[in-house]
Length: 89
Image 1 (cartoon, rainbow, N blue to C red):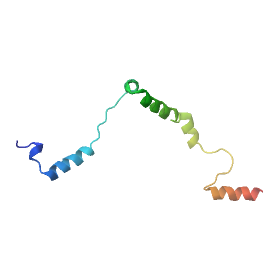
Image 2 (cartoon, rainbow, N blue to C red):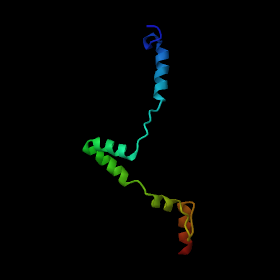
Image 3 (cartoon, rainbow, N blue to C red):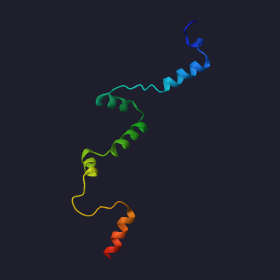
Image 4 (cartoon, rainbow, N blue to C red):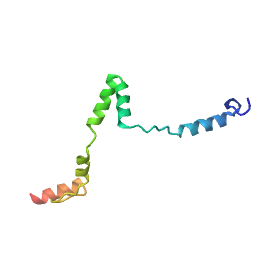
């Protein structure tokens, strides 16, 4: 069995195993294929997917997060905010 895995030393087999762990298998799927996969899941797993999707921010939310405030002060820390509040009182 020349050249087979059985001929490898334990160290060679260990190295090949480590290499295989670092190899990502990625299948590019379109939305329809993803939906088909979700439909094949058991009900409780589908529920987890639905819960995940419900909490994804939409484009408008993401834009608002990155949008600078048009008016009002900004603070670098909570301590800075509380100091400003104390000054107002």
